[in-house]
Length: 262
Image (cartoon, rainbow, N blue to C red):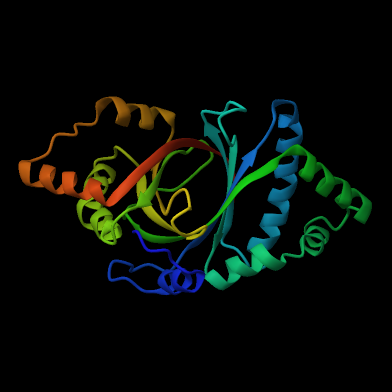
């Protein structure tokens, strides 16, 4: 899409109800973390501490859940090594968390036996252990159906897409989603979903959408990559060829679930 979108328009679009959306809205905050090698142990302790705070947020019904993913490749010169994902039921709750989260009050509630000095030390360790490289606000706009349940060890592929035509989401839902659904039905992958970026937005944003495929573990992912038959009939092949013109495929990242709170 060539035209620059204003923030107001992006938010209005994110609130719009599409015909294919039959499940409750889901909003996601992706935070990509850069962690230098020497800080690996401290970062793990930090996220274990924060998982307790996120459990309190779930109990307070301010979020639906939180995940920590390790990313591959993970070299310090290759971007982010970890990704945290926080799930929200509404855009309002996500924006409030991004702009005005009282983390000290939450920490005191989650860890009533810790002193304010001890909590402050953990927040200081948080700042020193990692650098938040990117923050992306997203909305789920489509997904496959099935009984897949995420667990520690779940593996994902994240394809970062840049929309170049307004029909992109329609193409994902009508051409590519049925293929993913067939793979889910055959047990070759766990699930697939399409996410739209709310922020960052505009022509200078790196991507506009993410497609996320989930697999039970690295074994199922390996079997999919090595053994999936990508042959299709001529009509479908032509539709796919045209559909690929609606987006610029920027890159793919692999992730493994390390912690989760629900």
